[in-house]
Amino acid sequence: MSDFVAPEGPSVFKRIIDGEIPSEVLFQDDLCFVIADINPSAPTHLLLIPKQEIPRLVDASEEHKSLLGHMMLVAGDIARKFGIQDAFRLVINNGEGAGQTVFHLHMHIMGNKKFNEADLGN
Ligand code: AMP
Image 1 (cartoon, rainbow, N blue to C red):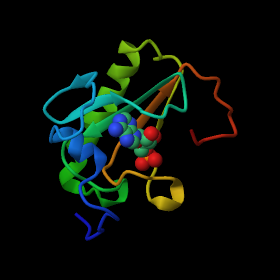
Image 2 (image 1 turned 120 degrees about the horizontal axis):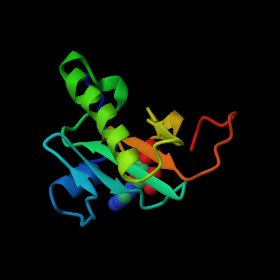
Image 3 (image 1 turned 135 degrees about the vertical axis):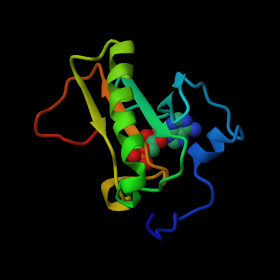
Image 4 (image 1 turned 180 degrees about the vertical axis):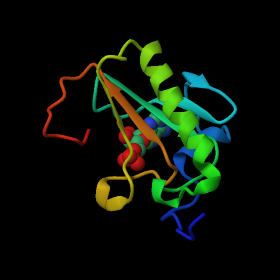
């Protein structure tokens, strides 16, 4: 794990995990959970969040390899479950400069949107 220090205290996702902030959990298993993004950028905009705290993708290391692989498979399962398996985008913002606002690693799963080939953002 890197020595990156998140800009604030416990992240909103950690507070959801700890039950301090209510949130409708759409899926969960031992390692991760899915909620709807509160400020959606697509008609279907879900967040896939590991229960383990990793601030940014770049802070992940060898020990997180199976967790990250697991999340990729869950992302596919969730896309199927929500009927967006033929057109969805998986986005990880890493660092403030890339638009990361919550420093607890998460994947955006976005679908039901007309994607612009040139726009790799959300
Ligand atoms: P990022 O900008 O990549 O760090 O993504 C953080 C995302 O978390 C944003 O799209 C926010 O809309 C979303 N978000 C923040 N607070 C909540 C919350 N309480 N429930 C659901 N989504 C949230």
